[in-house]
Length: 322
Image (cartoon, rainbow, N blue to C red; front, side):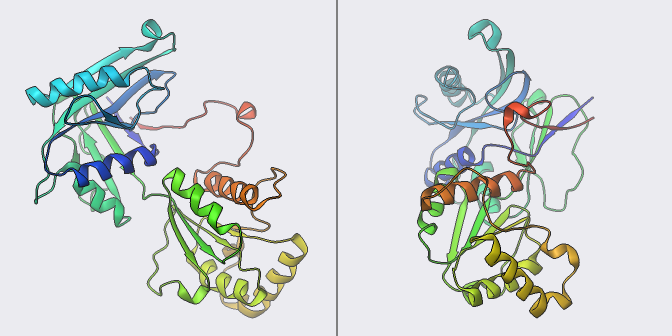
């Protein structure tokens, strides 16, 4: 007997779904959740798609575009009948892809003033709070959120999908250089949260760091770079990128250790990436921003940023608890 637990999900699609549910809180929706996948699949379990109340339009993707029209049709019927259903698609027979998908469709009632599953999820994610979801698809139950205090899986029967949604990836930038605007544009396209500060003192004193937050320092001024590092390093962020040449970084880090290193554990500088970015031959501000964001994304995902063709084993990793 298994409870499938998945860490990762396409957060940009989820943000679009939640935004639609919040802005359209006065009418019902159909939520389609990929709860199980066998073989090769475009999306992994935990991916979601929202069917518009008109039964025609969809938000999000559960395939490369070959299933969405059929899911919309099924979703319209689920909204009309109000009865959840689990549908199976054998993509080997239908589209020549080596996989089988199990998708759970359920009607989400209008949120109104009291809220519903999706609007409540939106609140938690906006607050960067842990968001644990249970989808009891075998018993045709409704998706629900677990209390923040719940640490263990609920239930141990086949047909229960349990997912922990991380807070959205967030990029904190210090500086006003030409790379800031491209970083803002790229993060918006990825569905990340973006915050920029011209001076390190602008960072709120009650700023809460988490494992989904990366920071980049690009003030191009030694004093401000030092101030930014003094604010960031003790936070224990998984990624801190520092823009500039290697020689400048060596001088800056030596000065930082002399000034502030006495009260810091040795591991505090372990997550500092200087110079920031992957080796992509970047020259323009846009290319530099792209290489930095790619490195930050790899670190936040626990990857090294290498070539996929050289990666042993599967591209996507799932955590399955038995």
